[in-house]
Amino acid sequence: MKKRSAVGTLLRIFPYAKSALPRVIGGTLAAIAAHMFALAIPQYLKNLVNSLAHNGTQAQLLIAVLAVLGLGMLEALMVLGRRWLVLTPGTHVEAGLRRTLYAKLQDLPVSFHDKWPSGQLLSRATGDLSLIRRWLSFGLVLLVANGITMVVGFVILFGFHWILGTIFLVTMAPLWVIGFKFEKDYHTTARRSQDQAGDLATSVEQSVHGIRVLKAFGRGEFMTGKFSHDALELRKTELLKAKMVSNLWLYLSMIPEFAVGLSLFAGVYLVSTNQMSIGDLAAFMATTVVLRWPTESIGFLLSMTIDAQTAVERFFEVLDEPVDIADPAVAQTITAPTGRITFENVHFRYQDAPSDQPDLLNGVNLEIEPGESVALIGITGSGKTTLTALASRLYEVTAGSIKVDGIDIRDLTREELRSHVAMAFEDATLFSTSVRENVLLGRPDSDEAELTQALEIAQAGFVHELPAGLDTVIGEEGLSLSGGQRQRLALARAVAAKPSVLVLDDPLSALDVDTEAMVEDALRTVLKATTALIVAHRPSTVQLADRVALLQDGKITAFGKHSDLLATNEHYRYVISSLDAAGQMIEVK
Image (tube, rainbow, N blue to C red; front, side, top):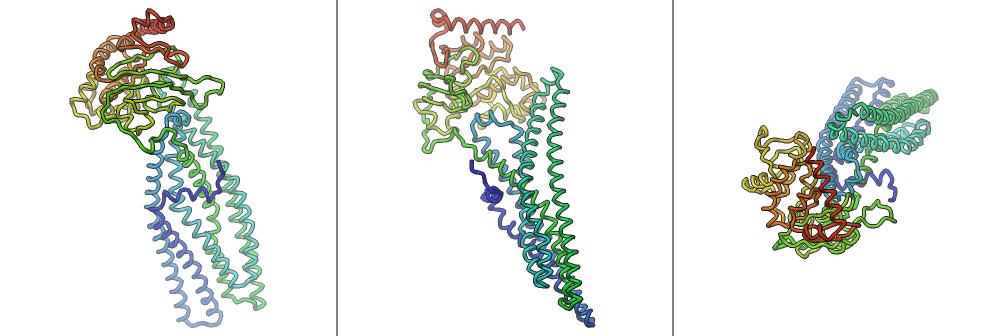
């Protein structure tokens, strides 16, 4: 990827800030006007001092004083106007960027989320976007205004006397060299700091979600030590940033003072030799005072700009990620869904798989008739879960095709496809909303009768005993519920979606034998009208299906009724025996 300059990186954010630009520009103009009024004050001081030195009248003195007072009030009004103009639009830009980032995260395929730690994404959606907002509303405005003020101020200084102007400019020149070196070094440190903040957020997120495991194994102290180590590394980086900024401030404070001292020394000499008036010297020194704030602000404005640059880089690292699983340019629709699903010579391999390793799925051919239920079995690691994930395009096939009702799923929009294909996962994920909203996630317009039916099929009647019944807000990821309860709600969610194809990735693994039997009996009524592909890890789940597909060495090597395969296929008997052993262990427990 081509490395962008700081300006090129920051300019990428402006298409997302178009709505705020008029007020940001207005705020910048107000800031420039405030500085111009401040620079005008020394001009009146010049006349005031010269008039006093030449026995000026009280009227002249009063006019000069009133002029300085008026300019000061105008400067204050412009500062107030700048703050009013830039305060609100920055928050709108931040909210828009956050919506854009969230929409992108929803659009990106599962393979992206497999690789990216959640804390890194969280830090980008919160801390980085907040940095960009502060820079747009404050850093950019003052950087432009102060830069223009310094240029105008130096021109004015040269107008008082070219010798003093030259002395002041030459003495201040090292600041630009120091600033350039600071930008180069600080950018690397700022990026490391923001990445470490993301890692720290990931550590917190994992510890909170895994708190039960940590407590069960007594590893809280270990994780606390790891967190402390990461926090200390971030602290070291932040201290290094502070040291770099403080070193810059040293030069920003020392060099201007030295420049003012040299200029004053030279100015006194010029006044003594009648090459310059006292008023001119007073106005020159007053102008340097006005330039003091723009000069000293370079340090934190530069550091803020670099922080914003790294934040923009991190923001666009996500936005620039390609969406490998996208909607087609011209989409087809399924007008009369029947639920027929066909796998034709399907290949799949993960992107990070070694090149000499064969495809995980190496030519799968399988056709499931409308209303038919098929159990998918195989040894651990054979690719069963991956195959089911391909059906709803959570991953994309490497080669071959998957068709629903004769249409390649890549020719359907993802929304269209997922309205016909619903999934229930072994690892049931619930959201921090009500039971009702969790169950109706796939079809929120369902009525109470459909909701009740889905809960009954999933044997999830326990929800009526919760404090607020269906309106009970469950805890984060449903951790306040048992594993079996979470699985039953996830199954109810899939059933409530009323898909033509139902994909079940061992959704009953956490249920006891009796509850599983009741769920299976209820599911049979659903599966009569719905095509189902079920990943089975128990013999009872296999018996729920009309036919069974055996996945072996990346292919379907056997397909038929359970009794027929049991009588004719040795590998099938081996897999079933292992499932039966696992089932017996579960029953004993």
